[in-house]
Image (cartoon, rainbow, N blue to C red; front, side, top):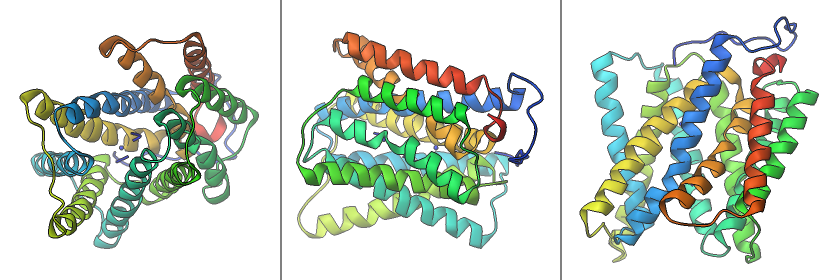
Length: 317
């Protein structure tokens, strides 16, 4: 999914800054573009995961491969670019955020899929913009303006229409809501912990921590006779590589970069583009049919995104 996982220090506009221009400054539009890229990369992961699963890969193999490859690539890039990492204490906090938050969200999400339909799980997971907006208002003092609330309503309604309904056991629905809550906390905590930290360093620390977590889990499962299942063909391995590079490295880097420019609430709402991307790719590549309801939901999400994007930075939207 959604699932988790994605710069130089950027000045944060204070909540009491007046609105001077009706359109966002270039840095804000850059943040919008970054979150759009992140949402597209994350949205494509469902398609890649389906191809990998069809080739024989299981969930733990996919997740371990994803973060190992992403961590290696990011470490190499950071070394070449001489990226400066934060202090040991701040690095530890960011690593814990990834090792606990990102991993916890992934496990709850995939666990929910065992007890509820994917459409219902996705719907419940994409309640996270609501949670993020509320948490950001409480802990980060981001204002709940009429524009934010209106865009949030449009995005939430559009998400509900896009992913559809579904049925599931109470445990599945509880796990899906837990995934949304954990991811919300991950975003809000990340907005504070990563302020002023290079997005490349943040993404690297998150992926390293997730690698350690899934590595430990894989070792425990192996001790119980539960081995990992890898793809049987080249197509499956290519799908795994796409998950690691596109849906992890690119997605997480652009998300954290956009997060610092836009704030937690606005970044999370713009991320609701993800289910639209997933549905469109499923229709184009897998031959799945788009219903009129799904199309209408996509339009509502896009309207909410455009409305939110056109009203300035997160602080004065």
